[in-house]
Length: 495
Ligand code: URP
Ligand code: ZN
Ligand code: ZN
Image 1 (cartoon, rainbow, N blue to C red):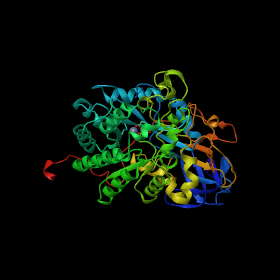
Image 2: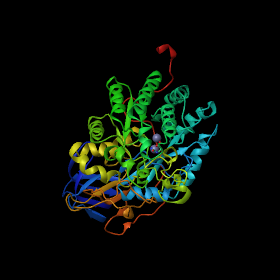
Image 3: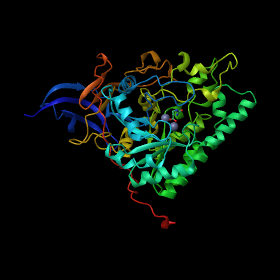
Image 4: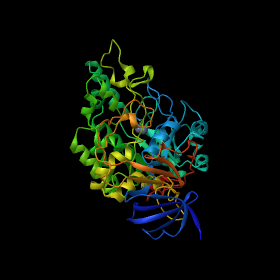
């Protein structure tokens, strides 16, 4: 009789396309069998995990994670490296992360950026991983590297419409999109109008308004909606697919929806912070508001959250990522608090490092509400399967297809057995001294996380039981989402 390495039995298996009582047999690193509950009792396996009725899902794919990046802002340094960031991810049910490989300033090679980032990640990861190239200077030399990047398994890149050191002009964005189209690369765009928000910042400071809450004032929804519209216009000139990252505002979402209904290949991402935080979180006393400073900012209130949930349910948002951006709060020159001084006792919001940690809390924070609002299969789709399809990882990742998919699983506790569980930063595994979600109740938590057949996280049996270095770089192919087929050269004559 054939023997297997691991059986996962008695689970409610949830994928993007099915929910049912199945048992799973794993051989080596792959899903070998998915069979009706109880039908694998006779087969031999080295280990059996009894899920006791808990959900068994494909491991989470978090396609927006910042780890060990050089300083983007005047102050603040990434607190998580590849070891601590992926450790945190695996404890929260995520088995694959896509991080960023940032180009150094100037006309510098994307290959050296890729190489540098490989060195940081190699033998340090608890999850599998890949990188988006982050491009700040799209010179002809840099653009000429795109085709070779594809051979290195990189099929996506990110560009910015804001941040002084990173902001591209429209003509530069067109250059990037054209070369991306030629090479079947998906372009991620941070869509905020950098000129407007810089001007708004000057206006606020001229009036003596420096506190963290003015970060949100400097970036009203129109700043995001305008840039989103412009990104869509630029992509429609080139007729190539883009993904608008970390969308927070209903008006930007409406622009995206409008483009999608016209058939344009526009994808979008949102994050838990835009379902859970509001601008009033930036106004917490004692500079605590700085903990929630991110860009785009959290919006006004529950009406905005409702619109973002609706966008997840109706497909406006393709993926839900964490945008884990690990700046510490209280750590000398590195922390968010470092912007406080005698001269500026409320700090200066323009210098607060932007971003919130969240790679570990992404799935638990959204499961309970997501189950009601989206249904379980849609939850899996936006937190795992769609990211795998969009970024060329499917069906190796994001699915449980026998013989095809890696044995990456997130196994939850049976519903109702973790009543009263609240998030406490002391129990998280990142290297950040806070979570924006301290004290928030979550109804469930990943009990086991399995990467390529190996248990990496066992909450009741020692916590992190896997080894760093088991996580591998995953070569990625072209996007599997509709619209990704728009590639090849582009003709001015089309206009
Ligand atoms: O505030 C944010 N989102 N910080 C992270 C950097 C980025 O733009 O994704
Ligand atoms: Zn961004
Ligand atoms: Zn980000």
